[in-house]
Image (cartoon, rainbow, N blue to C red; front, side, top):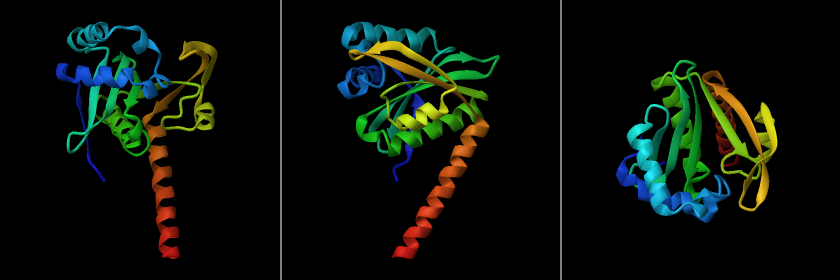
Length: 190
């Protein structure tokens, strides 16, 4: 398994971010902004985030240990007093499942253990099945807003939920148990 390296985004990462954000396969999972905003405006926006909004928006580059780009994550709406944030993740399509899930788990560990935040807020649009199936997203939703946004030519419902460290650890435990069952079953079949 390839180890991941997650580090704060730098100015030299902006062009990679813009290319990924403008990728047609990524647009469906984010918004249609990249198709409407010129690259130089996206660059200026990123420079502003990195230079002056770092206290309320942290952006990270995710690479394999060999330096291959996996994607970017961002923490926004950071409320240091309430210990909450919103986490977004933008991944190269080929890394959405395996490395994308590892990146998300690593970010949760960082959020809860290093930044000492207590709650991560999630917002996922209908039709986005980057890492979770649609029925799983709907089951997690604590709030739903039909036709909340218009993206890539259609109205999309948005689903919101909050996740605590205890929720994160419960998911990790379920995944560990599921992996053990699969390994045990494979061992019996060999």
